[in-house]
Image (tube, rainbow, N blue to C red):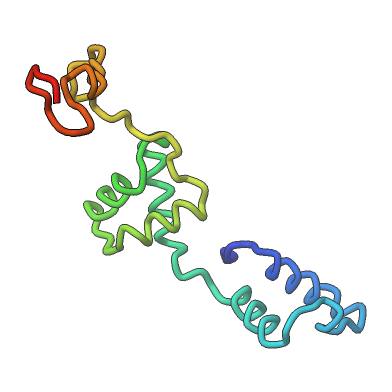
Length: 137
């Protein structure tokens, strides 16, 4: 059974749950609201609904030798018959730690040569009063 993402509250709930059998701990001492404690305790007991999908994501990621990001992994899953959204795949890949950190290099579309900087307005015949057209204003 896979556990949800571990947060500070989840760790507190686990600690209180483990120590409650040995010591009479109060939720007040742990600074946990009662509703939060029972909500997190029930979440920890619940089975992971994305367990099979996580396995499929891990398999697709491993087949690509870690080179695929969430978009390509989603395409692989859709080809294999999974019905899942892009955001779900992205979220699960982040929690699993399999998100590809390197981005593809974008293609350069320019000439790549040095750029010429425009001349200042005064050298182009532009004054504060308007365009001089070669004569004094």
